[in-house]
Amino acid sequence: MTYLAVPIAAKDLKSCKEHIAAACKAGAEMLELRTDFIEGLDTNKLKELIAAAKQTSLPIIVTCRDTAQGGQNNLPAPLRRQILTEAVKLGADLIDCEFANFLKEDFGQTIKKALAENKKTKLILSEHNFKEPIENLYEIYEEIYSVFPDAIAKTAYQAKHINDCFDAFDILREYGDKAIAICMGRFGIISRIIAKKLNAFLTFASIAEDQATAEGQLTIEKMKNLYRYDSINSDTELFGVIADPVEHSISPAVLNACFAAEKMNKVYLPLLVTDGQAGFDEFLDSITARVWLNFRGFSITIPHKVSALEYSQKKGEYIEPVAIQIGAVNTLVIGVNERITGFNTDYAGAMNALTEAMGTKKPLYNKIAAVIGAGGAARAIVAGLVDAGAKVTIYNRTVSKAQELAEDFKCRFAALEKIEETDAQIIVNCTSVGMYPKIDASPVPAKYLKPSMVVFDTVYNPLETLLLKQANQADAKTVMGSEMFIGQAAEQFKLFTHKDCPMDVLRKTTIKALSE
Image (cartoon, rainbow, N blue to C red; front, side, top):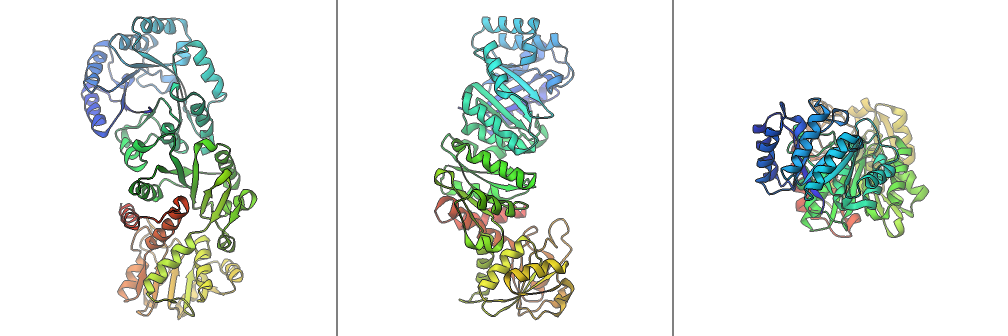
């Protein structure tokens, strides 16, 4: 069992007791009493705090952290040693001592003596680095076990790249429930979730975002409700969205809700991958080299769609022809023998959204379409429109980019300001104009919108952009960007699971996530 431990870190006992109650209500499986946060800490306060925690019947860790490794209030070594030994006497289930301090004879011998007198208390020996990854990770674990074989060895270090997490995963695979291995910071978030799959002794979650005791620590609510913590086991299949940035992606909420609805043993993660093609390649190489992680597929978004295409071309088994035509891959699936296949579901998502809005069997053939923008989204839209037989003109502020895209798909191009001359029946915005927070902008002046038009905005935050509001006022048909997201997500779900997506769950969760 991997415990979901919640740190109790407050300045006074009253607040600590309130946090204990909140942690229990939220579903904590273990409590870590961070006594170094308590102002005026002494053994009487420790006794009262442990008594309050014991009323919950949850296992208790007592920690009195050294400032050098993240502790608060700059407590002197004799007091920290006293607090830990007294915690053993008071029946704490575990105490956490920095390995560096345990090696000091006066500190370590005192703790060993207390543990020998109360064999029910276990010892966590920990090593922290809040600036960078810890080098020679295996050597640290082996040294800890050689010094105190019954210890639970813990490391927590700052990940500078998502690829720094793999050493921690290797440790957990090797030592399982005798180890805790956490990567801090935004790059290390996945290590906190995957810990349960790899049978770590524990992972941490906070009661609330403002009560986290380390950077990247998720709330217990997110762990349980967003990332399906309670359902994770060693057989769980992993998926995720590869992006930079990734923090605001709604894909984890949407795909995890769909997995839950279908009772699938799958979890979808946010994967912050930086450093362009090199960082992307190293990440995928690290994944495919570790079959036991059981990653089975990825959604790919900005700025990695071209990187995914290039990776698929170099090391993949198959790439969907339309993805090659578009020049971008937004979905990777890992199959038998870790062979990778690449797809582009933006194409299908966009075309399905358009055709449903137009409501006829062959709605796009011979229609005059204006596509605004010449980036990745535009490539997928243009490919779909051209394949369907539409007459496409690409409008872009940088005309040379519009020309380049037009040449690839044998269609027309023009400067953005020429949009006022369009007689288009379909207008598609593929730029970020109108996206939050600059919601008062539109790529098309309202006076050029007509009732005969279908106006499609690929921006989905906000749900109704200024362009769509003005198109509605002009009595034009409108297609929200959320429809394209829903369409492509449904296609990805099918590629990931080989089953149809629960569309009602997908739509409801998408709209809810975007509204928030």
